[in-house]
Length: 360
Ligand code: 2P0
Image (cartoon, rainbow, N blue to C red; front, side, top):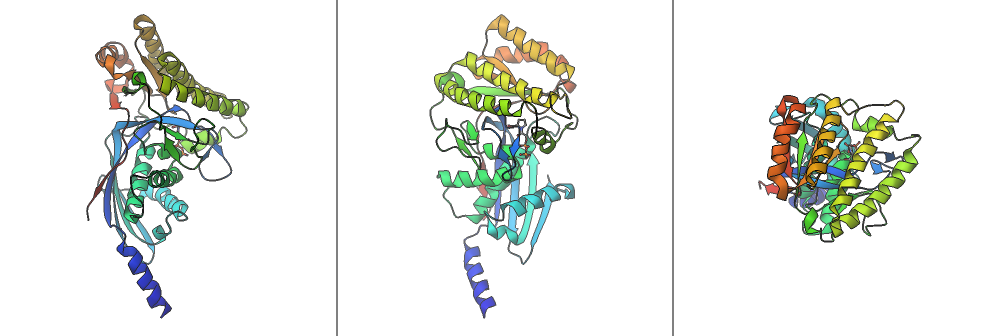
C-alpha cells in the first residue's frame, strides 16, 4: 500500500515536470579573474570575479527526460555518442542532487553542440554547464523565469559543473563571489550588476585571436589548485577584491582608461600567478606577447578604446568599443593575423543569456 501511495505522490509530482527542452547558453570572459578555490565546499571561489557574456559564442543543449527507477545518462555531442564526457556529467548530477532531488532517478538523454571550435580558449564548459543547468531547472518547472530566485538557482547548479559557468546567466555583467561592493553577491551563485552601465562601456565586442589551438597545458582543476599554498596567493586575492570594487565603479562612471588598466592588469596577474606557482607554467606563447605589444602600440598611436584580456591559455581576447569596429578590423587584418594560427579569430558581441525552447 505504501508503495502505491509513493507512486501516486511521485506521479502527481511528475505531472508538473516537462520532458524535453533545448537551451542555448553563451560562454563568458572574466574581466576580474576567478583563480583559486576555497576548501570549504564545492567550487567556492577565493575571490569575487566579474565577467561579460559572449552573445555569439554558445552551447546548444537538448535534454530529454523520462522517469525511471535508476538514473541513466546518455550523452552525445552533436549527435555522436561521447562516453568520455560521462564521468564529469555523472559527477555533476551527484553534486546537484541536494538542490534537485528528482535527478537521482530517470533517463536523461543529453545532446550538446558548441557553435565555436574546440581549442579556441573559449570556455566551452561555461556555456555547456550553463545550458545544462538551465535545462534542468526548466524541466523541473517550479520557478518563474522572471525572478532572481530562478536565475540564482540556475547559476548555483551551473557552478557545481564548472565555476565560471555560473556567470553565463546574465546579459549584464555577472558577479560571482561575495563582495562588499554588491549587496546580494554570493559565493554560491552569480548575480547581475543591476545599476546602469555607462554608455561608453555598454556596447563592446570581443574578438578571440587564436594563437595556439592545442590542448590546454594545465587543466582548470590543476590551475586553481596551484593557488593552495602559493607564496603570493593572499596578495592576489586582496588585489582581485580591490580591482572588482573599482571596476564596478568604472562600469558605472565610464572611465575607459581605468577599465583598460584594470582588465589588462587582471589578465597579466592571472598569468603571473601561474608563472610563480610550484610547479610553474608559462601559458603565453611568443605570439601572445607579440599581439599584446601590437595592441599597446596601436592604442598609443590611435588612442582608440581597446584592450586585451587572457584566459588560462595562449589566445588573446581583444576587447573594443563597437563604435571603432572598422578601425579594429583593419588593425586585426593587417597587424595581428600573421600571429594567429591559420589566420583564425572569432568575434562576439557582449551580453546574452540562456534562451529556452520547449518541445512539449
Ligand atoms: C575565470 N578561469 O574567471 C578564470 C580565469 C580561467 C581563467 O574560471 O574547476 O573551468 O570548473 O571551477 O571555471 C576556468 O576555470 O574551473 C576559469 P572549475 P573553470 O573565468
